[in-house]
Length: 271
View 1 (cartoon, one colour):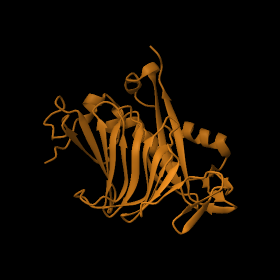
View 2: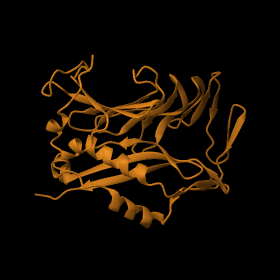
View 3: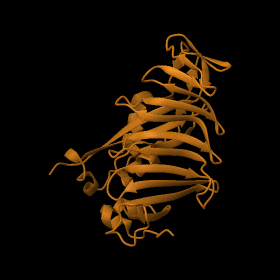
View 4: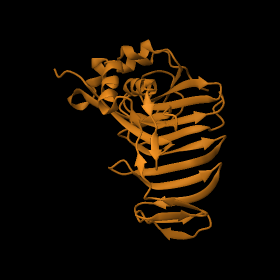
């Protein structure tokens, strides 16, 4: 049984919540059992139906950053399908990956270091494990148990495929360049409720958003890499999704998919 949270804005002390009526809210106690009231709640979950086959659950501390992010195929939340992510106590991403109809798929990343790089990367194909990279000890382990040393300067062979690490990559770029992108963010971001920023040191909070740009320059797979708090995260996601005017990345002159991270800092007035 889950209890719909109708007055979540009370403990967040923000008008932003009342302005956004999308999704449903559920409250939980410290042991993740259902909470009966706000006083006994330690966490809440924001459930968003993005379409008929995409249901996103974002779990937050009652006041504070993200705890985990889950995506499901069905409204019963029984079939994992899409982005999953887990965060540490400071709201920084700890591990993340993609699911397809209940199975791990594509790249899963674990144990991000201070440079925001994953120490462990695992590759799957619809539930089948392919290989694992360990960047701490620079080895690749394959599904059959064999191990190779990682070679960053030349080519790296994984099974039957070879990845050339000398490829020339041109990152994706917003039309108008960095200045145009900065102007877009400054123009589109809605200033947060001052009460929210008072929760942070020096009235300053940072959100880092990860997203993918397709070969056509279209944005997809937008999720939080570093969380601050629910309303700030939500606004950051909203604005990133609105930024559609991108030129795609290229690899050796050909358009390719590109992963990008954007840091957004919210600053309030000091008392």
